[in-house]
Length: 366
Image 1 (cartoon, helix red, strand yellow):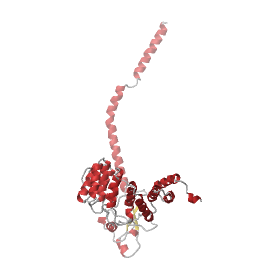
Image 2: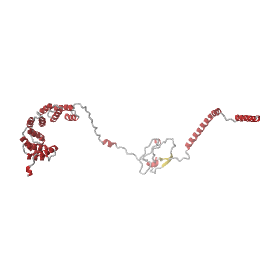
Image 3: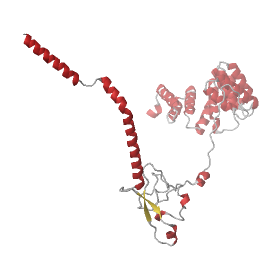
Image 4: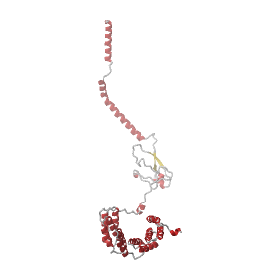
């Protein structure tokens, strides 16, 4: 055992000596070496960069061994003056990054054959030149755009701008406004008080304006001021041409059961002529005569209206009703049949009802 222990102890001593002799460098040793070498690496990089810069500059100046694009330049002006054909000289294009002394890279350059007139001097070469219009079939030349003709624009007349007028809802009409039209607009907007102010202003300026008077009377009637409306209409009877006012007043009186007063009013203000525009007035007078029991006079008036206005259904309805009252059923039937030939739906409906109610026509049955 002692021998073995001695051998093992000897081996351990030999291994410890070998490991101390061949041990790898530590981290601290490596870092110290790097600190001593980095200035040399930096100096080497600077030297290499300077050499590359010099080599690249010499290479750019020589321009040897490169297939560069060419740009056509104009030949001497003397050749154009003598009439000789124009030629183009190939000049190497500048290197990338070097500004062109002629035109920007994106702008096409003309050949000498496309140049008209004297060429610019060498001092003018730095100014940009606009390309002229190219001939058909020649590539690389954009056609010139036609300039706008200012004379055409000057000849077009300017349309006047529309004028927008804004009025306050409660404002009074101005001197140039039509109070009657303003009153109608106010009535359309249900502004009855404003319409009344317009109409009163109009009547104060023109008392003979019967249209404004009738409209104002209707405003009072709708507002429940019936007596005011009647007094307004009666005041209009003193103005020239009172027929429209008399008819409106007579209709209002008949609605109130004053048929005799309405009849006398219509007879006193009857139109002097038998013009066609007096048909409504005569129809109202005939109705007033029937309500007052004067059927014979109403019959005469209806018959005259049948001769002048046969297309009105109310004429034949009034005539038929008057004939029925006078106990003339067959003549009334004929009047109602004439009403069926008109285009008044109310008259047609009334006539059909009366034809059914009348006794049969004995003479036609025979």
